[in-house]
Amino acid sequence: MRDAVDFDLHGFVGIRVIQHRSGDADVVGRQLGLSPQPLERDPDIVVEFVDRIDVDRTMTYVGWPTGVFGADDYYVERRSGTTTTLARVPFADVGGCCCTFVCESGGSDVPLLLAAVNLIALGKGVLPLHASAFEYNGRGVLVTGWSKGGKTELLLVFAQHGARYVGDEWVYLDPDGQMYGVPEPIRLWRWQLRQLPDIWRRVPVAQRVRLRLLEQAARACHSRPLARLSPVMRGTPILERQLWVRTPPSQLFKNQAPAPQQARLDDVILTLSTTDGDVTTGTADGTEVAQRMAASLAQEREPFDSYYRQFLFAFPDRRNPVVDSAGMRESALLRERLGGRTVTVLRHRYPVDLGTLFEPVRQQLRLG
Image 1 (tube, rainbow, N blue to C red):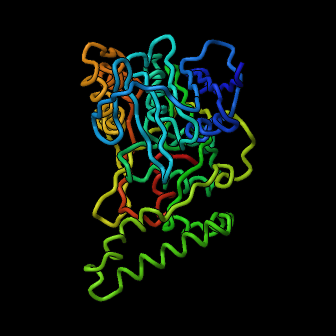
Image 2 (image 1 turned 135 degrees about the horizontal axis):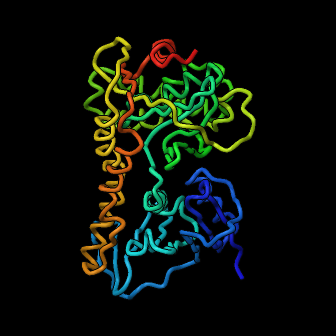
Image 3 (image 1 turned 90 degrees about the vertical axis):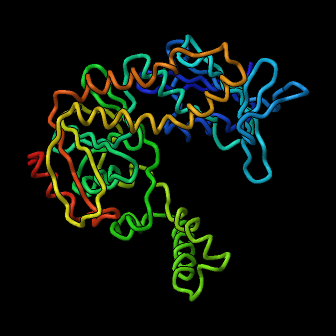
């Protein structure tokens, strides 16, 4: 019997990993931001790692070079350097009693696993929301918005004032008014770290050196005469997209005892990046915010949906009603969880001076 390792997302979604090599479960743990925890129930997802997947002699590409299918199954092919791994993605079974991913060992992640976790949670009445969340002075605060809207920035600001971490990137809202996160590392950009010197000092030396070298290279490209004509300059955006590190929440939130990433949902903030340099606050109706976030969640689900369309091209008779109805389920739960609330709207320029965010939000929410 091969070694099995379980993960549990707050009792909502259970994942069982069947390892082929030592460390296969670590791939899933890092991807989901979870630590191993025995399940006392059947898993919703099984991830089985193997050395090689036996495939049909003749395969057909759809969405080359990552999507391919044979007579019975659809696969996602991943390339990392000289390593190529194949994974069978169970599109027809996501949201059923149990769905099984089969992956070749050696890859950096399990393709589309988080999207499958979120779809299963959604089917159980738990709303996955692209958001950050924290607890400050006994009040649970949810911060949501479009990408680059300032969710993580507000989380960082309140961390510096003693807030308790709940989640970043994905936060799960249950029917009882509770929100849950996972302690996955937070992505911090170089411009944010310049404003957080105490955090910068805790970044490992090797990562600090890497960031400085990338920053110097990008700056040199911008300042070089006629640089825009050179191959190096054409690579500047690539360099700038690498100016970040991942930092565990424990390094950002002071004196936080180990505890479940959970809090009551009391306040909701919608963050918006604007062309105006002033930081302003206002309010919006929760129903309007729910409609906005339905569009945001559709955008976040797009990579999964793109592969799902490829799967349907390969197997048009194997539609999945859970996937097909995801947008309607999200909209209904958003209205239920956010409708009727008065939502605080925070507008600011991006990138923002982090020091300008705390006081306007504290006053608007009357957080003491």
